[in-house]
Image (tube, rainbow, N blue to C red; front, side):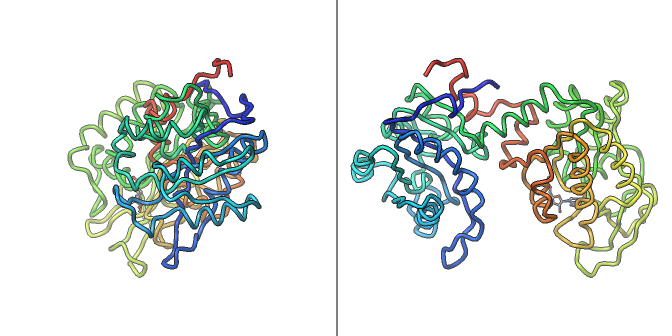
Amino acid sequence: MNKLSVSDIDFKGKRTLIRVDFNVPLDDALNITDDRRIVASLPTIKKVLGDGGRAILCSHLGRPKGKAVPEMSLKPVAKRLSELLDRKITCAPDCIGDETVKMIEALVDGEAILLENLRYHKEETDNSPVFARQLAAHAELYINDAFGSAHRAHASTEGVTKFIDICAAGFLMEKELKYLGSALAEPQRPFVAVLGGAKISGKIDVIENLFNRVDAILIGGGMAFTFFKAMGMNIGQSLLEDDKIGMAGEIIKKAKSRKIKFLLPADCVVADEITDDARIDTVPADGIRDDMKGVDIGPRTIQLFRDELLIAGTVVWNGPMGVFEIDAFARGTYEIAGILAEATADGAVTIVGGGDSALAVKKCGLEDKLSHISTGGGASLEFLEGKILPGVAALSDAKVVV
Ligand code: AMP
């Protein structure tokens, strides 16, 4: 995954198209409620501007589905970015078109402009070559710093790279590739994967790919119950994927034959319903009553997982251990976040693969205590599945001479 980096390039005098992830949450009054994605993109933007380059920033926001929806305008982002960079950043009226082109042509060295929402044009998600060429015409160099969109072959992540010779990874993208890439390619051992979330079907390709690399897999979340079913256990009303029972049995067999530790929960928190005021109990995994459903891992499981995680050299975590949206069922997920912070302090490389588990780490305030929290849920999952992300594959190789 040796891709050209922004740090390899001198941007002086160059118009540079930077694909960032400014898909920030907005409230009803269109105020940004969390600006972390904007803040995270600053190092790459500052590098280009600091070199005396001309930055043309582009992003999507929400799902306007090919229409200019005013509530999904990037104007509030331009305002926030101006404050953060302490200089005026204008939001162009569109991402293509004469007026926008004129504004780009008027940029001087060290100046930036933000293009309007890419997804106002359906050609963006269609990866239209005509649209990609229009975007590419804005610049001489291209940077992708939006890892969260790199698993989609869209015009701004993939199509555009066909029309610009030099395409580099931004600092954020580079960090994602460094952690996820080296975890898979050259992990410090033991390499332990913690997988949770609702269903086996969402994680099967990750399990298959990790089988070739990990020393242990720890399973929590709703998917554990289909494994229990495959083992002939009673799972009461717990989440079950009927059509995946056979596959679950095969996975257990495969783990055994490859001598990979495959740990399922030893005990579970069970509830009569998934609500705040449910009747709850903690039972051994083989003691789930017919009228109850498993909603979290229990304390014995947390201890069991802790023992594995504290001797790990590398940990990849994807998916919550229970229905963590409800406080009473969140303990397992939060405890795993805490254990990973401890493991990190002891020298392990700990990586959280975006989505719900990343949210859980943030809720615990442990973001800075783990090695890497991926910014892309879908993208990191596809990476862990061993898939090639089109937005990454399209970048220039590190050996390209700039
Ligand atoms: P995923 O997107 O597959 O990672 O799944 C995340 C979802 O799994 C979260 O919304 C959790 O509430 C849900 N989940 C985790 N454990 C369970 C469980 N035991 N039963 C039902 N849903 C669960």
